[in-house]
Image 1 (cartoon, each protein chain N blue to C red):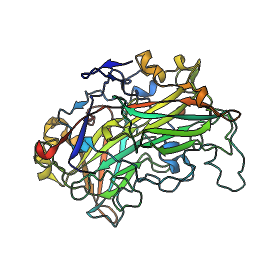
Image 2: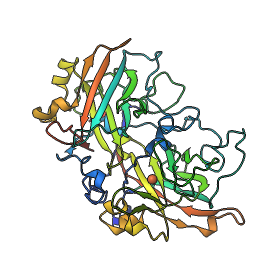
Image 3: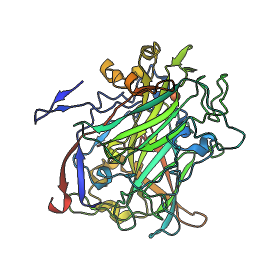
Image 4: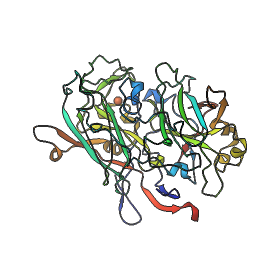
Length: 207
Length: 245
Ligand SMILES: [Fe+3]
């Protein structure tokens, strides 16, 4: 199917999404599937200990409308570096990669985790700085098109209150985007629970 | 790559994609958000950037599923099944190539069994088949895999639901706004119109865009049939510079 465009050319429809299914790990998280990893798998280490910035761990679960944990979830993360700059040139050998993936393993009871640094503040097009945040994409069986959300940090209260993006989210739902700091083993750990449905449903974005 | 150089994209047509809630696909019922998605009137650098993979170094057989599960030990055979080439272009909605982007695939073996801890289907594993591949598009947006045709498999949805033969396909595109995971089906498969996952798509024309065509001319005589599958990511609009905004 095609549609006319302004310049008289043809515009094609985007390829339509289909669920990533229960075996998404074979393709995108090989160790969870039980496959031997290749060199340079894209994994949960978004930043190595050598990267500039404050090392942090992110852990979380995704909860469905029945209150059950979605154990087969695949989470993708995209974030700015410590200076608030997106490093678009992906290289496996960089200390800061910016992009990563996480999926709960067999014994993780549905908990996924990421190792990274706290991102810097990225400018909003209006000129103000957005609060530090990580962009997340969710894929699983039963999710027909991936869900986009953002994770903010509860110890950035001032930046959050001034964030031109976060303050557009209705106040009653803003907390669904804020991860909670807890005492980690060797570095700060933030917990982020994503609810697909229900009174605590996480805000998901269309962009 | 210039950090202030951000391209916006043609709006995603949510009616063309499957809805989150598609009750004939039962798992979607409890996994579909009930609140409206929050629309961003002003996308930011967070949405308008994404990883590009021009400098991501892949293994020499990462895109060859006939060979990439043979680590050179005792497993020295080829996988069982119809040898096929799956290839095509990643282009945007204006038919502009999408170069340097990561294309990843995964699939069942010829018997319809996945090499996954959780797949307990009675069809046997193939000792010579892993079922995973990845590649990066070239300067003109082309990608190419060599594999075997996957088998259909049963799954618990209705009492007797079967997936048509399919390959899962993941593509990043130029930004996380263009991120897409879909499935490739094969021309002529009678299971396509019977599948509750296929039928999460409301428009038969949308289904048609996911059907790879037999490409006899692209085939290798006495070796492999070819299937052509082009992937369309969201169209890139004009570039703007946030410093001038
Ligand atoms: Fe499948």
